[in-house]
Amino acid sequence: MSSTEREGNEERATGNILEEIQLPENRGLLGGRSLVISPRGGNQRITRIPFCDICGVRLGERYLVCPACGRKVDANCFVSIEDQGICTACLRARLPLSKRAYKVLVCAANNVANTHVIEQVTRIGNREVRQILEELLAFSLVEKKGVFIFSTFKINDSGLVALGALRHIFGKDADVRYFDLALREFLTARSTVSQESKLSG
Image (tube, rainbow, N blue to C red; front, top):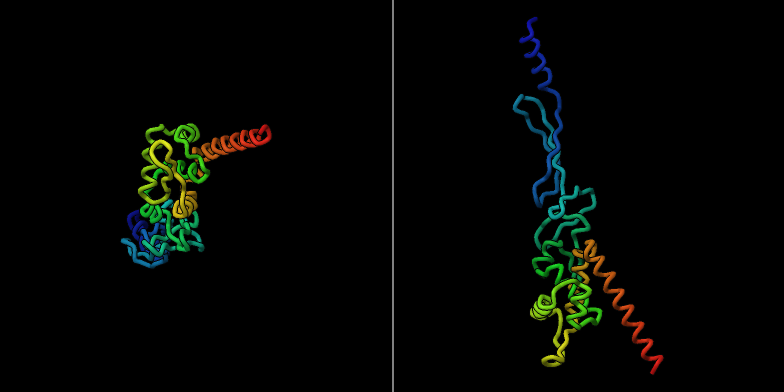
């Protein structure tokens, strides 16, 4: 038997072997299996593996589907806001705030209203801090109290709801953890000064 004949027989023999291929599933689809005929005439089993449509992590049996957009997502890319569960992509579309805006909102939630202090703990320039506060005001997440130079910004109920949801997106970032530490140090120092003032008074 010639080498050409042997190769032909091997091709025919392997044509019936079940070949398995794994492919990433398309966005919004949950994966599955299908059996197709390969170009060589053999049987091919294609397994489509579902991945999170946002972060790309491989999904196991426990996954969530966003009711707003239909994305299939990992639990880390899903958040509850006002008793409704949505994916973080939909949350960011609903609340298009930057990480810097999130930091300023955290300051407002902790009654840190002085823009110079906010600049100190966030490392955001004073001018930008003021712009962000106006942005938060436009989104109705803070309220402006007082007039002119005596005015200050206070977080409202909507801001607190937004803060809880946005923490799910930004809270684990390294720079946010550093900011949280700087804010805690400032709040501790402010509390100490306040207690000392009461004792001396």
